[in-house]
Image (cartoon, rainbow, N blue to C red; front, side, top):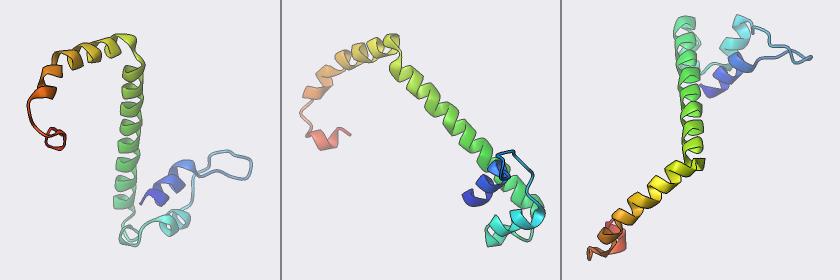
Length: 96
């Protein structure tokens, strides 16, 4: 399905302008189980685009948090507080 979504979202002509693909081009790029139902194809494609954008935003937010000195300091403090649990007697592989 990703191939179809990429085709629909990123279809460009030779000059790099975004153009709308025609129905035949979309169906040719679609998985066989979606080629007979254009409404379902569009619905599935849009859901995948939305999910990918949410994932991208989430990853960006996590990267920003990881780079934030205040969050790094808080993580260090939390790790320090829980350091006593490192000596709980359990083998390392059972603590994960």
